[in-house]
Image (cartoon, rainbow, N blue to C red; front, side, top):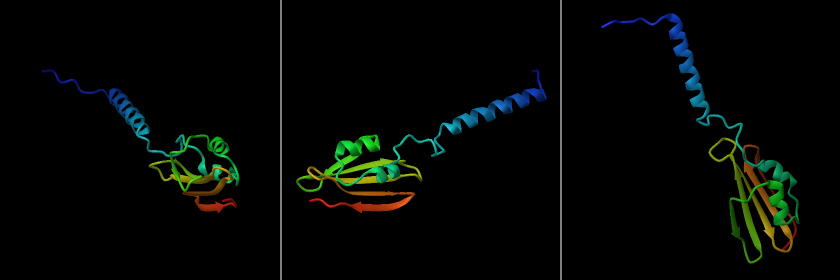
Amino acid sequence: MRNTPWIPSQRRLFLAALVAATGSWLAGCGGGDDNYQSPDLDAAYEAIAGGMSYAHVRGIVGADPGSQVADGDKVQLYRWESGQGTYLYTSLLVRIHERDGVTGKTVTGPNGNKTETYGGE
C-alpha cells in the first residue's frame, strides 16, 4: 500500500474549497434579516389617512392582507404582517367602515407601537 502525502498547495486548495462551500451554505440558511421581501408597514401606516377605501389602503401597502375579520355589520379589520420570524416583525391593523373608509389604524413592531383613530360611524 502506497501512502501519498498531501502536498501543501493541495491542502490550501482543499481548505479554500471547504471554506467557500461552508460560506455558501451558511448564506443560504437565512441568517440575515436585512434582505427580506416584505412590505414596509411603518411607511404604509404613515401614508394611510382617515376615510381611505380598502382599494387605496391595499395600493399603499402593496400586498393583500394576511387576514380579514368583520367587526360589526359594516366594519372590517384588515391585518398585514411583515418580517415573520425575524427581529423586524411588524403588524399593521386597519379598520375600514364600508361607508366612511378608514376609521382607525395600528402598527406594532421594532420601531414602536402607534395607533390613530378617525371620526366616522
